[in-house]
Length: 293
Image (tube, rainbow, N blue to C red; front, side):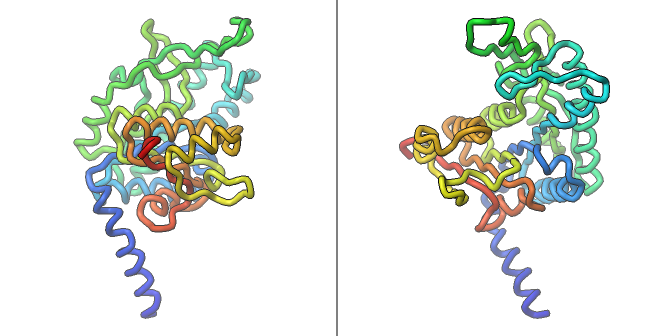
């Protein structure tokens, strides 16, 4: 019994300097992957977010929902088409995206956080004109074949709504839907929205939850800490490639823009957010500092 009590005390004391360092700081967290579909992982994520808010951290959640969108499209008999891993989004598909991301998924996350004692508020990037978007255009000669429809990229972010919610002790939960200059809706990659939001908010940290342990070396070993320069070299050498590459670029861009650290963490681990932020060991890869620092 005494040993168990000592272990608990050790864990709490280990967390103390991290809690002190994050007091009143903003942490932007991209919620996605297995953590969004496994009930136990969803519950542990919500508990993590509520605890962070309780100890003085300002968590801001940006979520994806690709599998859920695909499932509903399949149910209504609409076939999805992808170009370079991005879903071609016509008007009908955009209606489904808004329904799933802004309605179903967003409100589920809000309800879960609130059920654990938090005060979450669900938003899309259209609310308050938070995310202004422009149409994403792919390089290529054939504009028709490369047309992604209403897939967008971030033009600008107005942080006023998020800042107001943070100041009033609410937890913003944001669906990555932006609005164009003509009022059109755009489906935006959630990693990109989280990265841009972290920059604009001057966040202390950006966390990207994934279905992998983090960034791996050529032998499959986890790289727990990387400088921006080291990360650039791993990209240039082709060690970071495939689906991990856009996530790493997003994380790297954030630290170059002044976010103190970006972390790519294993969302398949229960309480991965707390383990990464408040313990010595963590559960992913931390990218720290701009090139040359």
